Image (cartoon, rainbow, N blue to C red; front, side):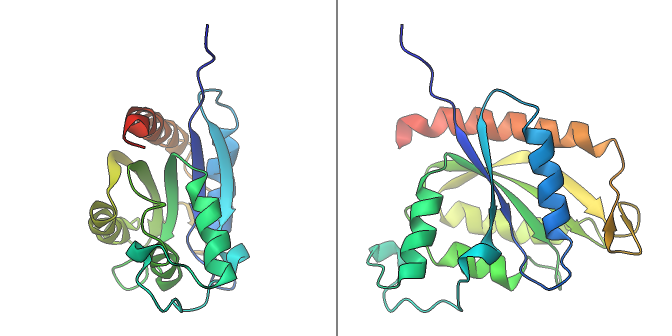
Length: 189
């Protein structure tokens, strides 16, 4: 009998800003994920990859990466079947750092699943709206469930993360959907 290979899901921290809230949110989602045994999870911080403003001479779709930082980022993203993007909302959109990190690659994202945990004054909902458009272009199936965290009620002084306990169930619903879609899309990869 063959052993079922579990999907591998990246929890991507999408902010590099000094004093960012994203690290605390990413750690919280990762801690919730570690209680599960239906997928393998890894916390991936885009800050660790030190990606400059997109500096590849060829479009990502050509898959002709010339910079070592791009090759490292591509190898990391290629490992995963799905993604949970932790995104702030800056000016009605996602962070420039996350958009830049996404734009470095193309085929490494294709035929995988994604979900979103957002935070901001309106729960980060507008950042997720922007990300859903980007996911479609990259052939990423984004799931319906999402977790929206308010800077006013889930953070003390808009900086100390203290989520409402109800959000843990929302994270698990999000993880359920991303895992299901990641498993389903394996046949396309």
